[in-house]
Image 1: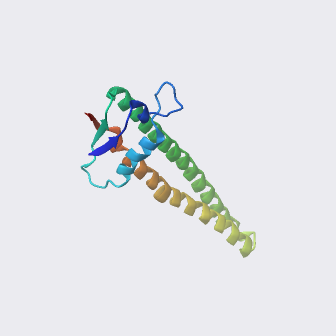
Image 2 (image 1 turned 180 degrees about the horizontal axis):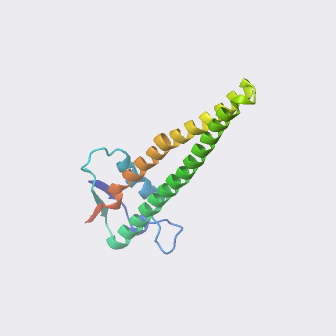
Image 3 (image 1 turned 120 degrees about the vertical axis):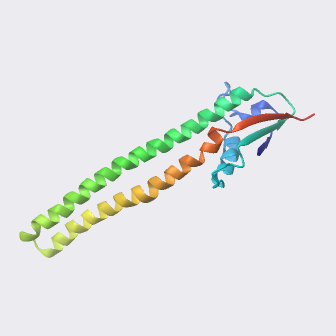
Length: 159
């Protein structure tokens, strides 16, 4: 269970947003800090308990929280899509340079062929690094958002 102590409902929202439809960055960072430590398939922190003296519109806060999570997940998806395009171009350039190096062995000296092959190999290595490391890390960050996306909420009124 994640516990959150606030004085007023306005503490949950960005103080610069008069419509109170954007989550307070401090609150959101606090909630995400619980997700980064989760590795078990069953989440220990699957309930958010908001402790306050004043009443809170739980449905509105849940919508605002889910909107923030959706925004983060959409950004992760955009990064993965951008990286996938880069991987494709890196592979194309790598294959072209490698093939060019092999085809030109008859006409050119060894040093130029080595440079051309080096560029091809570097492009292919970059593509592999992006796909196996960077995209993997982004997908892990995206999966860490699941507990917040499906979190149950309860309000505890202090007197």
